[in-house]
Length: 359
Image 1 (cartoon, helix red, strand yellow):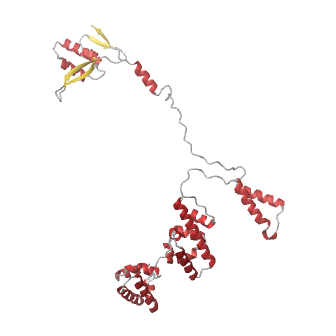
Image 2 (cartoon, helix red, strand yellow; image 1 turned 180 degrees about the vertical axis):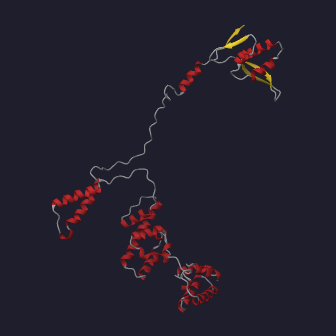
Image 3 (spheres, one colour; image 1 turned 60 degrees about the vertical axis):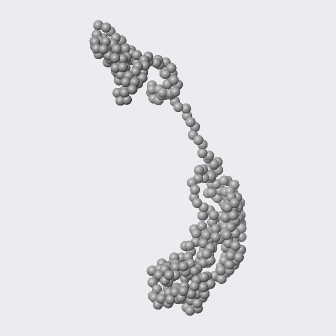
């Protein structure tokens, strides 16, 4: 329906009549103005039969009178094609069956999808057939439409029950394949099998043998067979088996990372820890500066002994808690610095082997 007719109906308060007018084929404002007295009377009777009141018919007659006096504007008063209301799947099925011409009749009857066509009752299907017959279509076209309706109904039934669909009509196969969604495949497409090529070649040669009453010689027939077979599938190309996706094999992790550099494996870590010796430590107590509570801590015995030796050399008395606090604050690796700060001692050595010498 054109936008102008929709606007005029809305201004007149007759928006509820859009579906009825569209069903009756009144799609433009100019078409509404060209209705004669008999057609307008029939339109009013149909509206009253549907359930609309006399006010609707009176307003519609006034709108028809206004439309007849106004000049038609094709740019502003153009309606979209009724065939665009059909679903893409139904249009594809009609196109593959050679029934494109009946789209207008199906749209006028309200059959606009494959599901609607498949769910038609026998009486409703007979009405559509009568509409096609009244439109002037031949009996062969009407029979082709009936076959298409049966195929679509069978396909919808198999789809709802989940059973595999077996379609005998090649047109229905084309329609279903044309409307099927494209999905990415996991396997590579198979080559054409040899048996199929031989069958098609024999069918074509059988047609050529009796073409216009002429017979093929044995030599020419053999050459045609070789040419057809070679053209369809070369000799060196064989039917391939479907390739199933295989999981890649896991290779063992090598223990060598680079030239002369070994990777730390679990075995080497356990071996290294088994040969290591625990550092001798003492448990000391000191008072925490923040909380003011006594806290226990483990400090190396060597660090605690060095702090005691340093305190004795200074000549000042140092409490045990202060020594413990100093031992906790000493970072790892500063024991050699502590030894170096003691008068009369110096330290030397490599790889953590501490040696003290008294002067």
